[in-house]
Image (cartoon, rainbow, N blue to C red; front, side, top):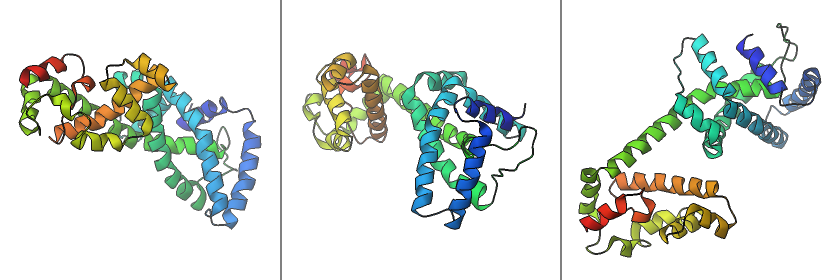
Amino acid sequence: MSNTEAIAETVDGFLADPRMLRIQRDAALVADLALGGFEGREYEVFEDRLLRDSMPILRGMLRSGTFITLSVRRFEERGIPFFVSSENRRLLHSSDAERDDIIVDVLMRARKMFRKQALLNGGWNPNFGGAKGACCLLTYFIGRCMWDFRGVYLRWARERERIARVEAALLDPEAFFSLLTVLPHHGEPETILFSGAFMELLEAQPPETQAVVRLTCEGYAAGEIADRLKSTPGAVRTRLYRFRRDLYQAASERKIWIPAQLHVNGVREQQRSAG
């Protein structure tokens, strides 16, 4: 089975309508959209619906690993190196937040090329005569997403590696204590917790993230914070992780003090002994 056929069959599994019926509807829709040059309000409504319909399919395919497998195969067939580590496969299987981060970037990239290739240049053909026949627009778009996945994934993976290096450096006493020379204080570090550069960074976050950070610094655990905010521990940890990612970036540039409560276990005592 070719990669295109595998994509079509996978997408078919998510949809209730028969493929030929979807293709007929899409052909009529494309004819209408062509009258407006594939732009304007009508096209925006179509594009929004295309992105919305794609989200659950991409989530399911990325969670199962099918999306990764088919995307890697597509590039390998063209001699383009592409590798997804088993660790990252497991993460994208287990983490809703990481999957959605990648999917949103993929969708934003794919939508532009889809309009050009599938519609303006006529790349989507409802009369395609291959072994399995034509595919619907949604299937074509998912295939386009697989082309854009490689660039998005490589950037995402590099960011994860960078964050890991920063965190590892900050756990090393020598690297960590080097930050102390630029701290704008001479007493207890926590006295500047909600002031200066830290507060500027915090105030740039969504209100929910600000609440999570403040409660964490007050000593509450993820489960306790979730109860107070009517959220879930997973959502709390995700917000905290994203804030810490920005915080570590600022710290790596020697712009900010990282409060002990936002470090992993063991760093608080190092900070106190260094004060």
